Image (cartoon, rainbow, N blue to C red; front, side, top):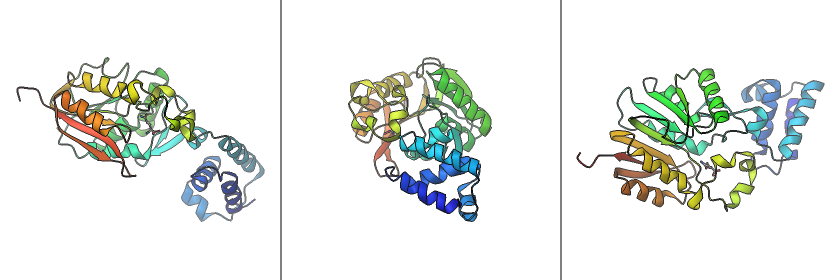
Length: 278
Ligand code: GLN
């Protein structure tokens, strides 16, 4: 069967996915170990029997809802491939907002940075690669996730330090920048029963107190582990920005503001820690 025909068939089989075309292309790229550009350039090439069987098997699994990132074992974030497993969240394009904003902050050349609940390492590793002088630490409570982050750092050549533990408890600090995409979804949120989220670790998604428990723990811990004038940036749910701004203001942060994601939703809130005397 030709590549273009196989892709057309696959698209109709995956019609219930909101990203059927992209899903089909990424799965076929994975089977052929080629890029999407290659697929379109050579769309009249024939797939051999083994390739077709392998593609069919992936399509069948995708039809049951398994995330493409789990089937291919990776997801692109900020233009780089990250290994993804069932132990980590799948990196989201919305989280790239956090990177964009972090790169605009007034930070020292060799800033000390920590990414809390790093999962695949997408945030911290991206920052380390975009700002090679920054000294980046990745923290995760899950050893399995930390192993994935360590693998990604090695593959991508990011000189980061990986530390196991809960939020800032394993770190001495002080840091110039603390970033995190913690769990922030309410346990009753219906999104948890839809799409890829069903296959991601609950511990990386759900937090008590309407999704605010971990966000508020991090804010509380951060003020003791930031340099004077250091920054805290948090990803959160689109309806949580006011609550997070209040948490930051009450903990003594100034210049508190919220940035929107690609869909125009409030997604990242940040503030600068200034000790009472400054
Ligand atoms: N943004 C993700 C979602 O809505 C959740 C990520 C998180 O809880 N940190 O699925």
